[in-house]
Image (cartoon, rainbow, N blue to C red; front, side, top):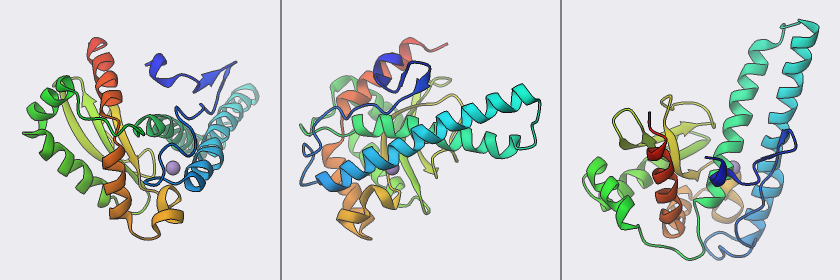
Length: 211
Ligand code: MN
């Protein structure tokens, strides 16, 4: 998946990848101020947290002191998943508001009955996330099918081995500044910007690597 995560790692540490478009490119559906804070502050915080956790784990190994291993393991899952999901999230929106490519459309229809049914389930699942989390369209390689998940926080309620393809952030920091408590409106806006060609590219790559 390295090509799809360009800029997310470098020089021996995780890094904040630049947005694939300008800060104002998604307005008015996603306004510059919200996007800028979300990317520059929140995503950067997860990158810092992830690198810091790895440093602390290295120190624990060197001193053979694993007294904090439970908290550090939790931090690794939290910040690591936060970094992965935010990196995907910026790519999950496009200023071009593209259609669903035929290749992805076929897989959506096979897994969910129709493209519209997949879109409806994704939006409903995302709006109904309890507290802070994500709506996630993912590829499941065992059955070679697509599934839709609700993640709580960043790391909870997944299925091991799935590859996320399209993700929508419904933490309050993702939308509150612009949409206040109207999470449903935010998700409806996200669906208008959804970058289906990116999801199709992720799917193609994941299927190539299928065991
Ligand atoms: Mn976020």
